[in-house]
Image (cartoon, rainbow, N blue to C red):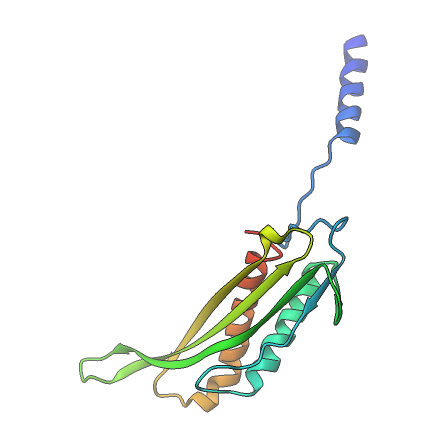
Length: 168
């Protein structure tokens, strides 16, 4: 009986003394230290410009941060800052067939991101991220552009989040 009481005491102590912290979104933010984030504009600096891309990307980035963190977004001073520019928007032929025509076209988007961590400057970074989608060469870019930009923006935002706020 004494052994059972001792085992129960150890289990109860272990349940209250140990804290396991995990997140399902990959975020590794210490909310005791970080409270705010500022997300700047990401202007298009690419040679080929698709104007709706900037708004699509910025909206996806802000939405992803608000869905996956408890950080308050601000326009002024903040603990963390994300800013940058869309540096690449390009098309290239892929999967050339035997008659020398491309059967696929690749849309590639690149974004340069400057991440500043005012609490821990060692985590700050300046990096370029790229993602792409292929589409049939028989389709016009204008017919698939909005959908591809949305998909690519989602992938880019996830890559950026994992490298910055996710600390992967």
